[in-house]
Image (cartoon, rainbow, N blue to C red; front, top):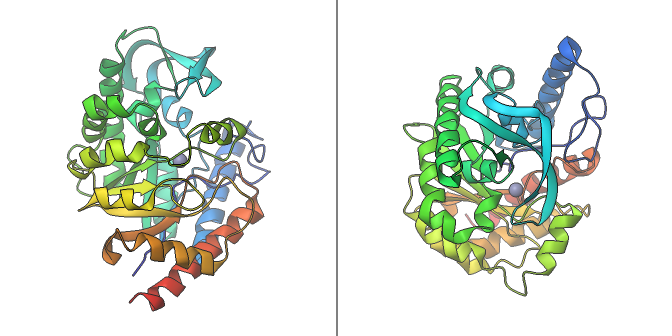
Length: 339
Ligand code: ZN
């Protein structure tokens, strides 16, 4: 009961990339970088297993950023001449690449890290990719001239890689869609359709992660403006509940999301955020178990998967490890308490 998992990313060791940065510079290049990525992937598989996490991930050690890590493998994008763009409805500025021609995959995107992870763990393995709406919100369009058309073009490419990952033996493919919490009406019009296109034909489990972002200042400032109750999920969960996606990862602990909104995901597996990634204070196992207990009022126990609120990429490594341990220990307490 209560199989634990993580949203996706984990901190990069300081010998792989600059620590505690969202867009870190790699510390090596060429073959040396490839070896460092492999070693970091193995290291985090071991740390997750030792902490007691049930569904493990590659920790996104092979990508510089959760969106651009995918885009680097797409033809039709100019990475040389990035432009400044306000993203997530102008919450913050980012230097983003530009779409300048028809989109096509250059080849496999996550084959190497998925292969390494699959060869070295018997646990269920999750690989994450950015969702179509979040991708088009993190890149400048100088070719399609239409957000939906461009999102659908990316969805086709995501689907191509997802099918290959499934063949590689990946158990869960998760699409990260923080943009779903920003453009709620568009989610209902085309966002979920694009997500379903990305997941089309997959027989493995499919998931979507929707959060209020990493614990960076632009996000914590934004959260201050959202009022006493964060009700964004209320506008998108009913449509998600009717979608073909199997699992939904959401933010819970220390958030202002009314917990009863989870009831809107009837029929879905719910990855409940019981670890705060915006705070360095490590949760106690008792706190984790209590959060699981609160969520149980709205999610059946066979569908509840304790998880982190978001990725841990910009965190301190030792704190991230302590939080993984608290996650597993708290789930173990809850398993006894609520069986
Ligand atoms: Zn997130």
